[in-house]
Length: 167
Image (tube, rainbow, N blue to C red; front, side, top):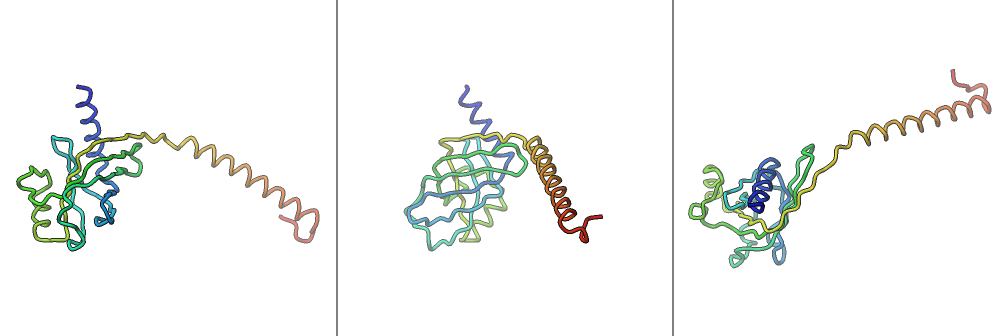
């Protein structure tokens, strides 16, 4: 039961973030690293998305390959790192693809678009602590230092060069 709850938690966080860096680990880097903006997850805890790629560069024998994904969003307070196995989906209708029909039609018409499915093998969840208190301390420190330099510079100008003294 705990494994299912963890998987649901990770899938919920993926759905919340919706954007990731996709790092395919293919031989000769045939599929480029890219930014994914819209992902879908299914009941098998797989991540589905579409990437743009030059079709002539992809070896038709490569069906699946290891990959990494870094999910993030500014201000979200957390991010995810996922390791998994990516698969190129050639027939999305037969595989239960959760992507919207409009996306499937676009990928069928445009040979530069690939549908990718990632089976999650490992997931790492990181919470990002709020930075607000650190900013206040940092701003206060900078204010004290800049005021001290300002006072020192005024004293230096006033004593050594009276005709240029500060008003």
